[in-house]
Length: 199
Length: 199
DNA sequence: TCCACCATGTAACTGGTTACATGATTAC
DNA sequence: GTAATCATGTAACCAGTTACATGGTGGA
Image 1 (cartoon, rainbow over the protein chains, first blue to last red):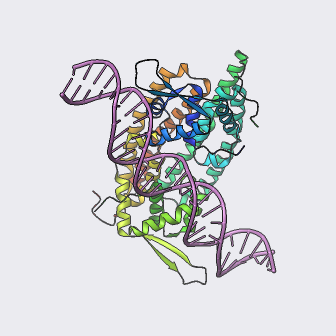
Image 2: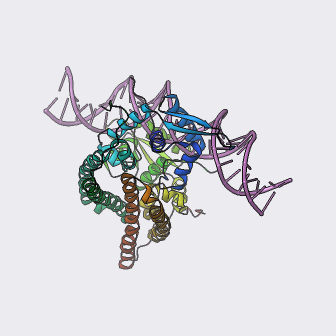
Image 3: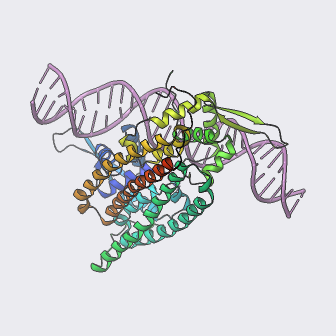
């Protein structure tokens, strides 16, 4: 099977549809109104993206006709779609993704529990934490050596980045605590992934 | 004068070149090796972007031939370029930019002192702080009402976003302190912008 | 009747990604 | 002489942006 290429927006859509069957309009609202404010969200972006996913057989759109409402194409994920989503979620974390702001990593984490189960989420958090630590120490070293010769606003902008990553690093500890707690209190069975072949 | 459209990468390049004349290769290294890890950075992105800026007369490339080195096209900003940069930096902060992660706003802040002077940087920080406060309270309200029905990983991903913005909000206070201190200690004259017409 | 909202689409454009190509200089 | 690094480019492709188009439904 050739490697399908799917944009980040595509994965965001696939993940949302896998969580809950939705129409294009529903999905647009998610991007417009919830905390997923990045990944927007114009009709010219999401309708073609949904069509692409459908042509790859990862989702299927069914026209709702039961009620007297206007035609509404509700998409749901196929087994292949869930599998593909799981594959994406299972990718090891790369340093370059951390560098680019870790937004895609957070998106992946958001879907992880539902698709791969809580243990995977914990593993991901541990890996993420390690990657953040590496990147942070690099940033801090950079700030120490180059900070003095930067204008104040540049130095502060860099400081903002460092604080952001430090905050994320702290967050991983918080999230791990939350997960460990939920795992011990109820020995939560992970949701079965639809297919076995998630390399 | 028609409104030129310049991508964020274009502004990043313009700002860097305005700080210090540089070749395409120098600029690539900045994106590859410093904390400006987003905005990359392949030759296929930055060389065409530099050409576009040059065709808009915002920068000028001069081939270095003094040394025996290989031809190296060093770009420097023109007065029109500095003016355009100032115009971009002067844009009021929009909520939508905050929502998209505030990366462009941080980029703007990084260049601000050099182009518009310290007072502008302070004003920007105050505006930014207010925008963050608004956005944060919206996010927190969203988390309160929708958090319970989200899976743990989704809830935690949201929490990460909130923490990130809260961290930025705290950072604005820190940055304002740093600026006020530097302004009172030495009554630093802002660098004159090259042209008056920054609407 | 007209407005606001639900809902889906399309067409033109363009900036960035990926990958390839080239050639000069320095160090070993 | 050859590998690494400096340095600049180009060409194909495509996803996302902007803007426009359409048409149903419910309420004032």
